[in-house]
Image (tube, rainbow, N blue to C red; front, top):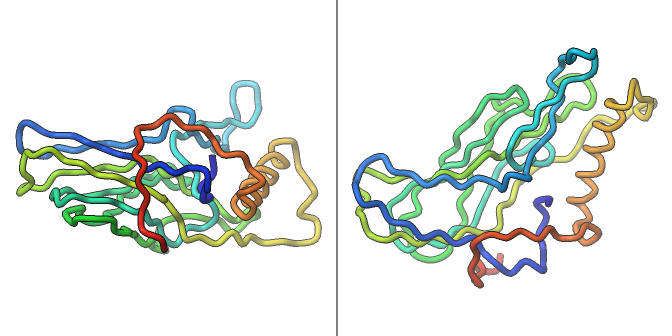
Length: 212
């Protein structure tokens, strides 16, 4: 369930929809319910144990610089947005642009420095969570049937973190588990062939974007 390229996955996510009335219409695409990121919120529960919350979405590795996705459009005038939550719980909305083109096209958004993705203490990286895509109508959008395909969600990121003598010393099991989780996730991304592909039952089409 990481973001690495899976050679065995030959499918794309396909959408077909139609709105009867004009206006501020939108389609929301969320990850499946099993996609959740467990976060420590810096508090203790009633039993004096570390308190965690589960954030729905896909964890993005490292400190993200940009996010891209291939889109196959058929000329419908709709806008594509990506919703991302930072480690503080704030949501950022990024506009990929209009999908009013015909054919495959890569769409990219840059993540500005102002989006918090780290702290001064170790581990420095505080990952982002991809919450959803939103496909939003425009005032000039017609009410014709819309067909869109999406594939190859990718991130441009850096997995670097501070390394120092003594980083393997753990305060408690929570401290150890958090460091091991970050390390394991980075290793899965760098060596995707060693990680079995997740079987996901989603609407799909036997179509692929052009070779890069």
